[in-house]
Image: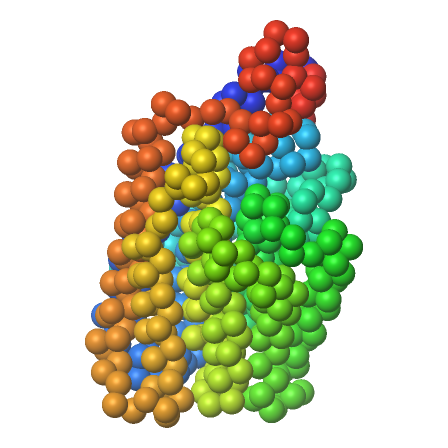
Length: 444
């Protein structure tokens, strides 16, 4: 049944609020959980992680990549995709369902973590992961419908992200059902983190520089070709990881394949052009620029870890940098920029989130030092102290995002507009009586 799409969109354009609030609150609790998991048992900082820690590490990794960072990504998608693909907004009930599934899944895993009982953690985490996986499966039909409408400004980087959601949801549920099988655990990290989140993060980065700021980085044809090469590199990386875990390949160096897609997205996006704009004084998101810069450091860590660190569970420090250096910063920066677009704040008047940027750089530096210590190149390091600094830095950065959301998004929204300033050219007057050609007459 049809409905007034313009009136419904007046609410739906702000639908990212609920998911942003869920993310801001749960990421502060996540920092506490990280401290509880690693600092209360500091053995991990003095040696590479071991296989029996699968459940604890998988639980702490699931929280950001399926929980609070995913909430930000879905919130951005709910807001932008109807505009990018010129379709009606998402249904209110779907948004509410995903909010409930997301926060419930995270809470179950968090409760399991703080019990410090491995059996309780496994039981609660399986239930929580099922809820987090279900939220993505529910996105499947709409993702398929949206991607059939066009390519958007970043092409297959956005379409690939959308179409991958139900696959990631199913894989999450299967991984926790078979959590004691090491190969499924490694497959989960390889596909979800090395593949999906690297792709999604680059979609955020590319969307910011190329689409939002209109920096001329690559043509649509090159964008499509870049995605094709990226997909091939990720598939090769997944196959090499599987062969390594199965024992078919025994050379530890093959794990460096994690760096190939990271290096590809770094160089194909033309760092020379990006930094030319930055050095020329053009404004951009410092968080997204920091995330982009971390691509090179993370790739370097992947090569170092494959050569010098013997470990069973695979590329712990590289993936830690990938999550927090690249994924989290790209999601934070995109979220802040989106909300400020809704507030119609001119780019030159926007404040730089220096606290979170500096804290995340300290976190990255700490992780690099810990990896060098485990690899035998920084023996004098006080590992426990550096680990505490790393977690405290993450906590401060998370609280900074939470404080921003409460101050600028919840209690200071009188300047908020239903259409972001970037899209105002699509809307011939917010409330013109003559009608809005952007909005369809039927809800999707």
